[in-house]
Length: 131
View (cartoon, rainbow, N blue to C red):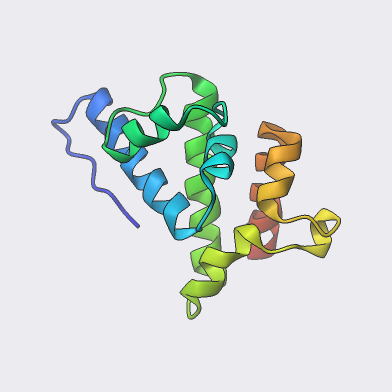
């Protein structure tokens, strides 16, 4: 999943492309609306934001949300590199219980620990890749 950023695009357009990209990724991961909101660090009741992002409205300007998107895309990259022949496993991994996370799924870790949980999942995959 790559998006070429046009060198003539504005930061707002770039954030819109990121929004569409991350929403497509969350759809591939087959996450509930509540889980999608949690991973993006927004209130579970804020379905309107998810709808706006899906339409390409710029992802939030907060550093937290912008960094979350970067880590989610990094997780996706790691999964695609770890499981190059098994896209289904790469997409299912986030919702699968994992002994490394006390038998929680990566999504549950992120929901429980917030941004720190997101960093834990990303670091686990980075280590698995030997990065």
